[in-house]
Length: 325
Image (cartoon, rainbow, N blue to C red; front, side):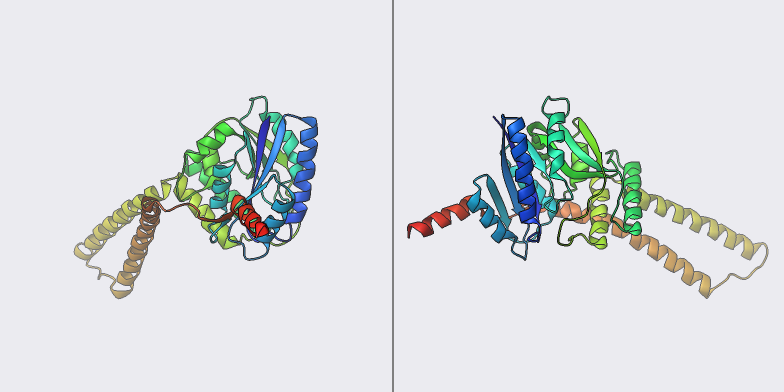
């Protein structure tokens, strides 16, 4: 038998969890009939939700022994949720997908067909459009991928998602990258392996609202750039060289105008403009260095990527003890 672990990071997903469970069990049930060698487990990750997400996990665990869950002590972010799921998944194959049904479970049979024979180590979806997103958000997303692929040696496919069906070998390779500052899209590409991209049109959430704001996505994109590229450091160095060159040229021009032509040197306004320009460049470059230093500082502290406050094993144990009493 081959076990497939379905990892589902969740944050405030009470509105959609029951719909997701019904859909995923329906699809996996059909897969089990077609492929009798398959068994499934559903590993939900509660990323510090403030709604009834954890209570729904309890309900699902009570009625289905295949349901497992890990509840974080606070919100650690989706990246930590995916890492916790991959780390605790027991399957020979591991699926990562969202609970909002924007990652259609109907793709799972097709994904498995590409992976089962060993031709591919991973099958994932790639959006062919960004239907439902604002034009501004879509424009920034496309620009991010273009910039990222130009300044990084790790190619990240535009539109590729976290919805993946992976072999155990690939999952183990990902887990070896236990860095604190995680950018999974880059990690998935960096580890390599053969990946099959399945095109699909963007699907809107089945219910609820997304927790990703524009500012949150912008910060996440900066995480990706700093995690897989040192180009910003090179840019800071180039700005310093260019500023020095301009200053040297202006100094020569000023000396020539004063000594040869006798022109008075422009005073206060010019000085203030130059001071502000150079100060701004210095602060900008210092900020870039500070961001990389901050990431290095966090890595050296060796803090855990997540802290679990409850699992399905602990929940079932407490419930059994309560029933005995």
